[in-house]
Image (cartoon, rainbow, N blue to C red):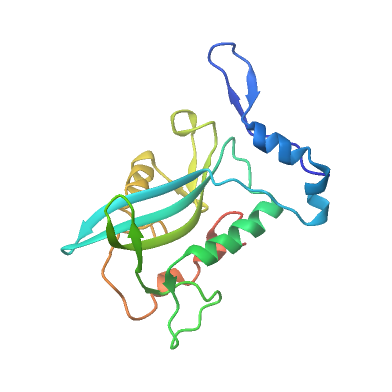
Length: 198
C-alpha cells in the first residue's frame, strides 16, 4: 500500500493543520496501478536553488536541489534510495582516473555547458546535487536546531549556503576555480548526507 501523505501546514486563518498534498499527488497516491508495492516511488523536489555568480572574472550558474524536513523528521527509506540515485546523476563534480573514491561522483570540478533560454546563449553550470535541510521546528524562525546534511548550522550559514557563498558540500567558502585533482574533503560527502546516501 502507498504510504500515507504526512506533509502538513498550519493554516493561520482557520488555525488547523491541512495537508500539503496537491490534487495530482492525491490522484497518484490513490491510483491502484501506481502502488508502491509494485516498485513505484514518487518523490517531489522541495526546492531547486539556482544562482548566477561571477568569480575570477568568469560567469557561472550554480544549482542544487534541497529536500526540506520539518519537526526533525528523517528521509524515508524509499525516498533515500531515489534521492541518492538522483544526487549521483545530477552532480558534475567527478572523480579523476587517478583518484578512487568510494562513490565515483566527487572530486575534480567540471562545468557543463548548456543553452539558456533567458540569456539566449550557452552558459556554464555547476550542479551540486541533492542536500537535506532539516529543521527541529517548522522552519528557520521556530527551530532551535538546523542541520544541513547532518551538520548543525546557523541561520547565517543557511543564508550563505543558499546564496552559494558557502560551498553546499564542504560548508567552506565557495571556490569556483577548476580543479584537476580530487579534493580530499569531498570523499566522505555521500556518507554524511542525511537520508540520501547513508
